[in-house]
Figure 1 (cartoon, rainbow, N blue to C red):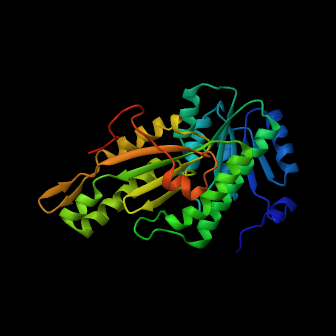
Figure 2 (cartoon, rainbow, N blue to C red):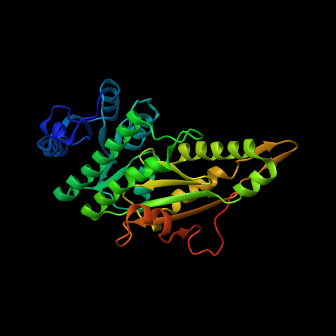
Figure 3 (cartoon, rainbow, N blue to C red):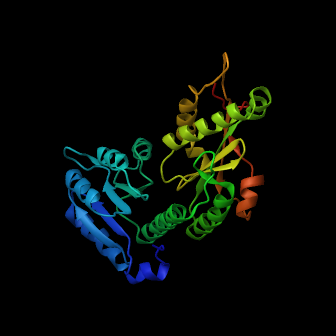
Length: 306
């Protein structure tokens, strides 16, 4: 089945389904009213238990959940359970909260949220954030229906990423939002190839991709951009807020070893990031030439594991 066009979505013919989970019915009604005027089909629940049951029963693509949700399934637990459910296509999750502290943001992102919005909503900002969600879901649908996958690792390839990134970049410029690209590079892959050959090198790349798929937020598009490099596109963030992500990736990569004869191969990793948009640079120039920030921040040595 073909993906819905923008005009079809706006007409409501194939409108995205949205689930709002908030214990305050008034808040839910306000958000529901705004979204329905934009063509979304919205259902509201007041508890995590009821919200999960509805999510299991319908093709929900966007979920808005109260961070302070109470009950046997609170907001954080709700998102954990939601992310554990097998779904053929991606669900975009937005936490909303009256809290503005960094701990709340980190906890929300850590359990799988894609965005974190403050109450009360600014109508224009809310609309722009929904546009970003829509764009990401459209990209996910294109990948779901159409290829562009690196056969070695199962993540999208450089060509496909170069098709999608300009769209995201243009959206960020129009909405005046920042995003980040995080690059994870196997620094000693050439040496591994020279010493152990293709098969071990192949195993290293596949193993790194498997780790990255486990630790990155599902919404953060991951691509293999070079033979020894992966790129994660982090929505609604910038490089100086990427430290927790970099630390989590490095911690997950530290145990990675590949058996080779009577020895073990220990890949070494460099993690860098940059914020987009970058001045007037086009998407390809950002990928290839824009300055990158190394982790740990402020350090002179590249961050390594192994």
